[in-house]
Image 1 (cartoon, rainbow, N blue to C red):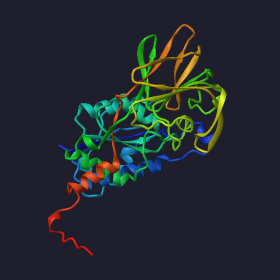
Image 2 (cartoon, rainbow, N blue to C red):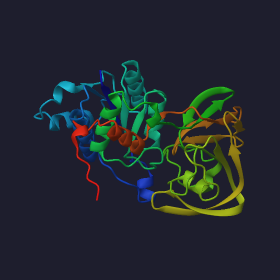
Image 3 (cartoon, rainbow, N blue to C red):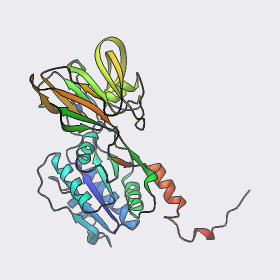
Image 4 (tube, rainbow, N blue to C red):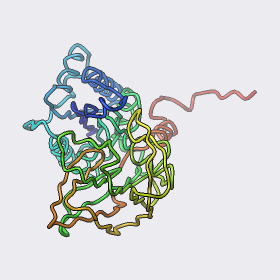
Length: 338
C-alpha cells in the first residue's frame, strides 16, 4: 500500500527573528495552501493513503475542507489519531506514528527546528522537507505540488535508495547521557534567559558546532561557510569559538548580516566528543534554546553521520522519468533527429 505522511508545523517561522531581521513569513493560510497542493500532487500520482498530523490551527483539516468536493481525495486522507500538545513533541510523536504504520515517505513543512523534532521520531522514513521556517538550511524550497508528486513517486517503491541522502546530526550529552540532537547547529550561549528561544545576538555565543557550513546558507552555518566550507554530504563537521582573531562576515539570520571575530576553528569527525566549556549555559539546537547546563553538570557535543534520510528531489525526479512513471506507452514516441 502506497502511503505518505504530512507533518506541518503551524508555529514555524514565528520567532523573535521576525522583529530583529527580515525573515521569511509563511503564515498558516499559506501553509494550508501548500498542504492542499501536496495532497493534490500525491493523489494525481496514485498515492493510496495520506496521513496528516493534527495541529492547533487545523492545517490538515482546512486543506481537506478545501478539497471536500474534489473527487478521490477525502477517502484517501487520514488525520493521525493523537492528542495535540501544541509543542514540538507533536511532530516527534507524529513521525513515530508514521514509522510504526509503514509510511513510505514524510513531507514536512517547517524550518530546521521542525525537521529536528521529526528526526527524533524517525531516522529511517525518508523526508521531503519543505521550507516554511526562519532558518531553512535543512529543508528545501520546492513547490508543494511537485513535493506531492515526488512523495507519491517514491512511495511506489521503484526509485530505490539511490535517490536518498543520509544527512548528519549533532548528538548532545549531559553527564555522559545522550539527551538531544541538532541537525544543523548546536550553539553554546551564556545568556540564560530562554524566553525568546531564538539565538540572534552573537555577543552571547561562546561555542558553535556545525554539521555543515556553506556560504550560501543562512544562520551560523553561513558563518562557518565563509571561513571553512563543509558540504552536507561530507563526513565531517566544524567547530568554532568566537573571540579575538579572524573577522568573518555572514548572514546570521534573514536580513541580519554581522561581522564576528573567530578565535578558533577545528574539524569535527564522527563520534568525536567536544566538551562544552561555559557553565552555566544554555545550548541552542537548530536556532532555539533548548537545554540548560548548571555549574555541576558537564556537556559534550559529537558529530554523528547517521542522521535522517532525505529524498534528493532532482535525483529522484530524474530517476522517475527514466522509469517512465509519468508517461504511458513511452516506446511509441518517435524521436526525430535534426
